[in-house]
Length: 512
Image: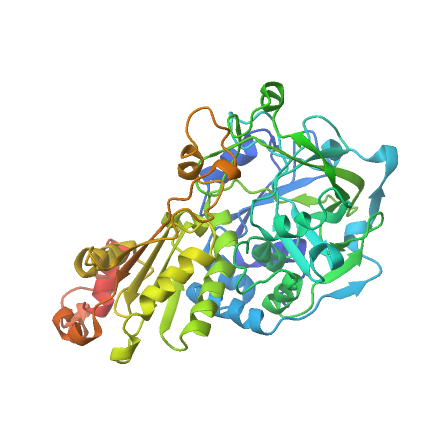
């Protein structure tokens, strides 16, 4: 059977063949149980639940991107670390979407009095601190004049605690969605669709926020998704608004942002008329989010597949969301660095310890004395262009950027704090959802973007000076001269190697 990743459900068939998915018919409650099991099996297999409490016609799915090895399998990449190169090729060679007239996502169409988001989508509760179930697994699609002539896909959390046909729509300040909506505030409704259960390439692109030097306003993010999967993404005209939907999605909410009205995400925030105080929906930074007042999203239609449509929620700040948020970001940073200094940067990695898009590590190979200093330019660029980044580290090509221990060793032995520690852009634009920035607003002030104070990002130049590279020579132990079979049988040797940490295994392989 040929691999088909043009839809979520065809991808699930591939995962079943590969043994990459757990499927259960035991009932699961979208209130807390779904989030609990996602966290319990974080970085584990994909999970499909065929029996959802209160939703006999729906299914729940998660953890698609929780393992880098699974991402590599889905997109046909030999090694997980090489996926960024596939994405970079897609950035350079997009494949425009194909417009179709008939689509699986519109097999059932609900309008007027039939609209009820609570009956159509098994929204989940993330934590016991949340006021109720919220919709965080939908991918916003903005097209045409509503996104400067291109296609934009993203994640935006939504709360429907007051109604079945309208809710709140949270927009990260400085995001593509924010840029687009700003053009229409108090002038015109912004038409869009919210797509759930989309092709994996679309899921990856939906997490690509804040890379705008490489993904400028008006670009075609759906075309990049097409290039990632290797063929066009199918789009279909929405039934009730001037927008497009992802044809192979499972569920689609059509509607528009009313830019003249705002509403509260949380009943207590509404009661007290205060933003940034009450817990609401976890954030990418690993902290509990806060409730805000934001634009109202008016539902004009809900469409879906006939056969048990699938909703794919994410828990936020897990391995699944980390990889969704960071894979396109890695490729974009690699492309940015290549445009600035061709051939200097060898690789880029965003470790999960960096809290999603909050940091990065990149390796450089200085080829001559006049390459010296470029690494500091690159650190500055990463920390200013990539909104929300707080830490960036530059290392030499001999450092394993995929092992935090080796990166820390480079920082400890190669950073001169007088000249190699950079504090970049204090007082500039940061990321609203970083508590350190909100708390700087002080007591008695609402914790909102306008009051947040960006303290700046930290850049660590952990590279060796080119002219003194000889002084930083790492000893290479003679591991290549040693064959363990001389002293131990195959099983003993394999057991011994497997007992070692990832860092120690790297030493074993390289002799460094």
